[in-house]
Image 1: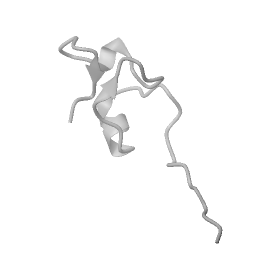
Image 2 (image 1 turned 45 degrees about the vertical axis):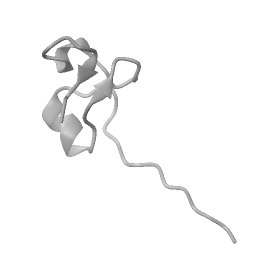
Image 3 (image 1 turned 120 degrees about the horizontal axis):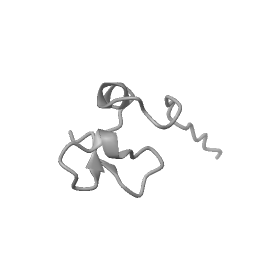
Image 4 (image 1 turned 60 degrees about the horizontal axis):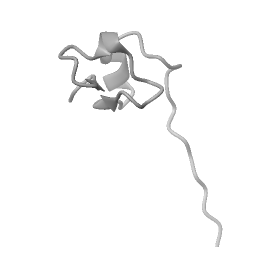
Length: 51
């Protein structure tokens, strides 16, 4: 039996804003993620685009 793995279609990182990230299914982006940017983290807690 073979399984196919499909990666989600994503906008090029980094996201210009949280609206774009959330429309792409991304939220609660940790500071360790390649998608994280300080401008996406309004409260400075290390989590960008909080849901």
